[in-house]
Length: 261
Image (cartoon, rainbow, N blue to C red; front, side, top):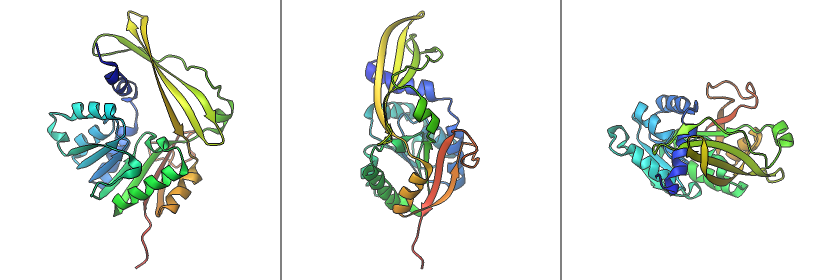
């Protein structure tokens, strides 16, 4: 039987493994090179395949020790991952004593910063760790105004397909928004895991988390305030221009704004 503290990170990998963001971040690492700093690396769902494919030196930072532990276990014994350094820490307080060619916030990790002060503090620390010719990449979701206005709060989504856990049990996932605060642009959400055998649910595990969504020009202004210039804004992982997908992604590439010499 899998311990509950390990179950949530394991299920995260199960349900999010097929996302198309891994080839996108792999291509970025191939294009810009390392060293790479990934903020909100979690279980290594993105970080590990990027390093295995490209061989870049990398550092992963996350505030959740349970997710990091799974990342460590997946990297252990794989010589391709020997150059990865994993750090339990707060992305607002980075002090790594190193600089990086590529800094990434994959899959909404920047949206875990809930206030403007948090966002600015983090971006200023990132700027101190980014090479002068380095690239910062932030992957947020693009907020859908119709969805924010009309999507019911407190209603659970339909359950996912059934997946098997390593101990033979079955797991399904559902989600719901339990609080939507339009003024603060924050949502309190739940991920619900239904676990059982032979179609009978024996356990229901709920993870509650809070995120803040950002709109395009809000994010661009935050970056400008912290000394970055925008290089590109994409609407999906195929690098199509922002606005061509509905609602699509909000992926911003930025570089340091350097003083004129």
